Image: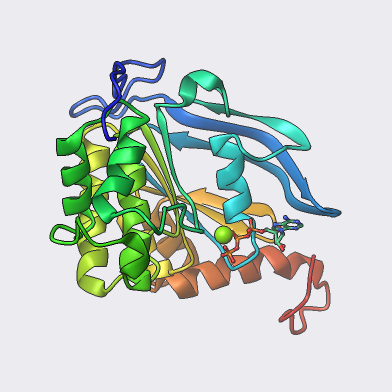
Length: 276
Ligand SMILES: Nc1ncnc2c1ncn2[C@@H]1O[C@H](COP(=O)(O)OP(=O)(O)OP(=O)(O)O)[C@@H](O)[C@H]1O
Ligand SMILES: [Mg+2]
């Protein structure tokens, strides 16, 4: 049920070297160039270009509907794109050879409700040549040790989400893309997870983590700030604080948005609710 013999190509050199100990020189894990995406009739990402560093935590932040999930989908290769290009670990996004190298935690949990917690994680692990100890470690990482035998459908909402997170962690991918992984988690578990993400990044894993909780931005090495399908800025939390002239990251982001929108209002009057 749980094992399938397959070589586990986990963190070998895949064209993108991880962080050098003590050094700063590194290649990008993901390069996005002039990306445009239409969903339905709407242009939901427009001319987005960014570079996501390897071996670091990149936070993808923006209000609901700003395009975070769409950008993530483009990175993991499940989003039809209208223009531009996305390269992941030196290959085109969605390339078949990236299957074991990219882990994806979706906003909507993709867990089998009728399977036990541990069987869900073993099942996802087996698809990447991982075994029982990997599944146990992933469950430990999300605070679900002790719940192994429980049917996933009988868990609370937050616990159920964590099974999904364990399924994304179990393959130990080079690039881990997590769409709002901390939603529904209590503060203790949230802090524990961010610590775990930092440990993974230090070991060379590249992480992209979306959130609309600005306080989580402080855990990231670099931030992508999205607004209405546009990339407003790519900067560090420190740069965001200094550009926003406050230690409050949420207020700093608001000030950046207001600054970006201000030039459209030539009278200098109230800009609230205005669109460029
Ligand atoms: N299948 C779809 N068809 C048409 N429009 C869509 C579709 N999915 C998303 N959109 C639109 O694309 C825009 C970006 O959506 P997206 O899900 O990327 O936002 P998000 O930043 O992840 O939001 P949230 O924080 O609520 O998850 C939104 O305006 C949304 O309504
Ligand atoms: Mg989303």
